[in-house]
Length: 161
Image (cartoon, rainbow, N blue to C red; front, side, top):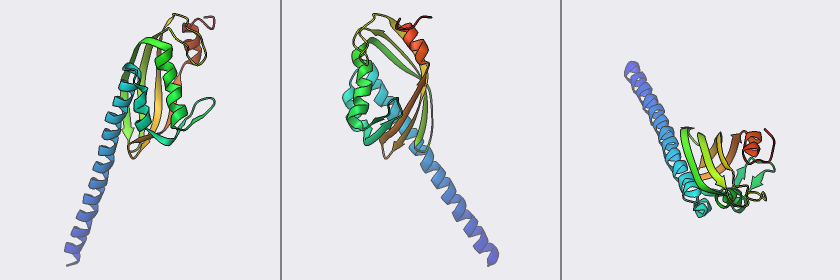
């Protein structure tokens, strides 16, 4: 009897672990699909209104200065759409685990409009970076981008090489 009970207990716990693991894996895959679509639409298609539904109301962009709230986060990325034409945003790779996600990306574009107050330079840029994000209940709650800001400013012709 003890052996049967023990076998049953082990089987239930293994099933529970596998079920929980499968659930986390499904969340990660859903988040990758969602996040890929959001940035394809927002940057490549220039339809930043998708951020109204993609961002949580209290989203935080770990920028300098820190950007808090959906409206300010949307305004932040609107600068890329209004500041650059010939935009191409390519996700090279993306990894997710549960609600956390990392994307490796390349952004290319021609600076033909005002970008964070910087008048158009007509220069073409190519940046490579990564973003760490957190997605909770289908909404982006945090993001932090990492790229070479000096190289970016040099490509815009704003800093000497």
